[in-house]
Length: 252
Image 1 (cartoon, rainbow, N blue to C red):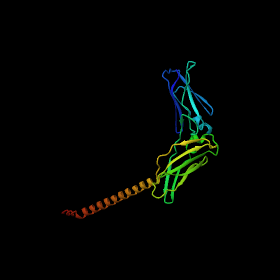
Image 2: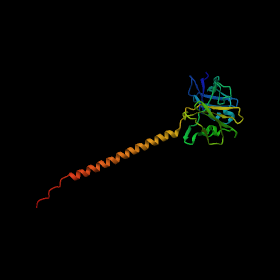
Image 3: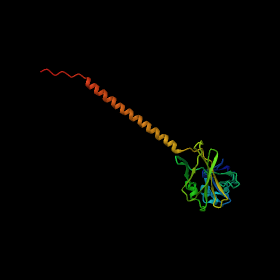
Image 4: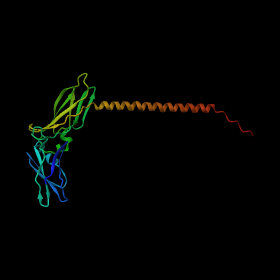
């Protein structure tokens, strides 16, 4: 019997395939054959899942390609019919059953009197898979900053930049929070890996300032309590000493 429920999962950026097999014997193994527009690979395993990340992230051509997987069961020199997965791709411009996406690296929004700046680690350096993949020098990460319903930027971050940043011109009366969208663009600009939209991001330094202020206030209160306690203790000790009667001299 062939395996069933062959399922591909692409979870930022790990890519795995899993399956079910109801009649497995101790000597049963599985042949996983990944195929598509950018080559193929065969992996044998006794598990019910297999990591495909090393294949997908080998090069820009691979992670922008179109892929699918078939799995066969092997036992005693015999093999089952192949069970096929849905097709998948990280390239939004490919036609595939599953469109995989990546998440933004952690984003920092710093607001000062001089202005506001959004910054984050360049995905080409944040993700080891993207960093090690063979790709042209003109591959870029393009991102847009949105605040108050208005889009800013459309900025490009090149492969060689360690960090990406953008100065946000917050208008008067608009909450100083942003969301980001973005995508990795192929060197030839005909493929892109989409990133999930971030949650609302608000100034990290504002939270830090509130914490610092609270610590200073608490420290001041503790200091005042200690000083008052010392004064009260010293006053009571002096009063007790002053009011204590002298003992009579011993008669000889």
